[in-house]
Structure formats: C-alpha cells, structure tokens
Length: 429
Image (cartoon, rainbow, N blue to C red; front, side, top):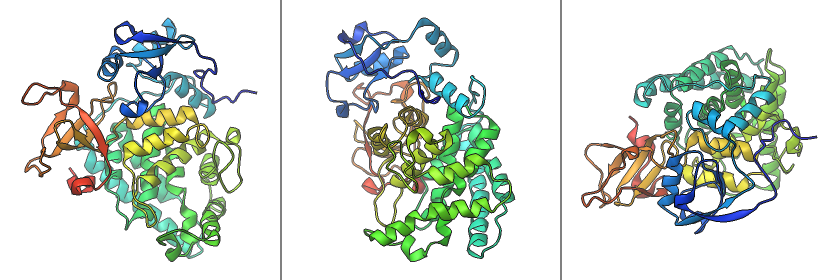
C-alpha cells in the first residue's frame, strides 16, 4: 500500500539527454550538471525548472546540463504554478499531501508577508520571551512533581503563530541569536519557531500551526528530569550516559500524558522526534512509514537546530552546511519530500547566514527572495579587507549589483559561525 504522504515526483527510471542552457525551458527536470554539484550553490542534486529565473541561475554556472526526459511537468501543473506565484520543487504536490495527511483540504493556506522583517522583529522577540517564561514554568513544575498545566504555553504559542504568519523571517533571524548558555531553553524556542515557519510554508491552518508549535516547544521537556551535569558534559558520552539521555523521550511522554488536553499529534511528536525513516532511531526503532507528518517535520527541525547550535560537545555548523547535511541524510534518516520543502522554506542561504561575496566583503542574510533563492537581501558588515563597516548598508541581490568595475557581485560561499569574529547575535537589528 502506498504511503498517503509520498509525493508523486520520484521515478526510478531515467532517460537522460544533454541540453544546452539556451534550450532549457520550464517543466524540464535537470538530472546532472556539467560539473560537480559541490561546485555550485544548488543544494538539490536534481530539480525541476519552474521559472526563467532558474535558467538564468544555471547559466551562471553551467554551459550545459542533462535533462531526464521521463520527468516533465504538464501544462496544467504550470497553470497552477503560475497562479501560486512560481513555487518550485513540486511544492504544490507535497503541500497537498501534507494537507491530506493532516486531515485538511487539498488546497494549502497561502500567507502573504504582512510586515517587513525589521518591523516584526520586536513583536517576535516579545513572543519569544513569553514562550520562554511558559517553558520555564513547565520545567520547574515538572522538577517539583506538579501536574503540568499548559494554558500559558498554549497562549505563548498563539503569539508565535501570529508573528510567523505576519513574517516568518523575524523568528528565523532571532534563532541566530542563540548562545551556549541558554541552549536548553533556546533549542526548544528555536525548534518551535522553525516548525511554525515550516508549517506556514506548507500551508497549514492556524489551528494546525498551534498544535505544531506546541509540540515543538515541548519536544525535550523530559530533559528537565535529567542531571544538569550530564546535559552540560563536554566530550563523548559513555554508553550508560547516552542511554540516560535517550530516556528523556519516555520521561517527557509520561509527563505529558498526565496533563489535560494534550493533542495526540503533540504526543506523537514528543514520542517520535528521534525516530528515523530507516528505523534506526529511538526509543522504539519505529519504521518511517508509521511516523506521522508532524513527527517527521519535528525530526528534521530538531536535527537542524541542534547541528547549527554551539553545544557542550560539538561546534555549530553554518545553516547552509546543515541544509546540505540534511539533504545527504534524506531517505535514510528523513522524509525526502519534507527535507526538500524545509530547504525551500529556509532558502539556499537562510536568514542569519554569514556569507562572503566575490568582492571579499562579508555580509549577513537579512531576507529571502521567495522566487530567486540565490538573490537574498544582505546586510554588509565587513569590507574586502575584513574591517567592520561603521554603518551597515543593505544590499539586495535581486537588483543584480555590480562592483566598481561593473562586474556582477555574487555570493561566493557560506561561512561558518564565528569566522572573522562575526556572529549574527552581535548585529541584532
């Protein structure tokens, strides 16, 4: 029986043919490049062409590509694509599958951006603070053996939902403010924010976002019952310590089951966010086909936030590198369609990423261009000699900027957090 969540875009047969860039057109599926994928900024090793802008981006890196003739969009799909504003990577198919799996209608909700990120930032920060206080109360009550009351947590998540609907970039930017000292609280808040942005991207309803965000906030509450020195230990854990860490899933689940009115999907998220598609996860080694959509999403986001955070035992990866890792782990660890959609949600260079331009300048990504992900809005923070600017100018790559010699300015590479002493938290708007 086919899983109701599988998207209809994967085919094990291919019939590849070489095409010059000038001969490409929307609807074609690019299966190979004329150079290694690692030498380009394209995260997907194979993708549909959904707009002329994508062809322009390919032209910057390739002379020709190979097209899989057995994978081509039909005209009806392109009509839907045009109406939806040019979404890529079979978004509509995946979104429709998510809506079906969550019991909603076929058509996803589409949320326009209502406020610029800088205007939403203070409201998002305030909502984060309310959520942190709610989470602290839950963890204190749990340590004291009190029954959990989630009223405050629900209200906090409602504020985050409203913020992410107005502009998801604000919460994503704030997630870059993380520090090692508040990883325990910060991880839960950030996971909640990323999940809400992900759910918004997939077109979930407000009520579904409320459940998704509450699950994200509560994923790791079982850790409140573990010894703090264990959670803060630097270096490799012993087998006994690792098993104790794993027990936070069962501990959290038991605590939530004693609370009133916890949605079933929240319980599923807490229970299964460390399970994997190939059955290699814990605590039950559940096969991926048995995992719910929200649990699959939680597994992706929990991993992404963890590997982009400074932890006692591991250094942070850049968001760009973390997305590449997730893409490498798709199918075996995570659901392929959802990994691709999460990458679409955050963009090739996620908000808060540190990048170096071909001019040598250093910048931080402020916002995504929804339809041209290689053309984000940047905040310039260092000149070509790696000296901090006195004022931080904004450079919108969609305007195709040029340098003093009229050469195109482009993003050369993503940088790891802390390179050249740059941390996004030091440039809070």
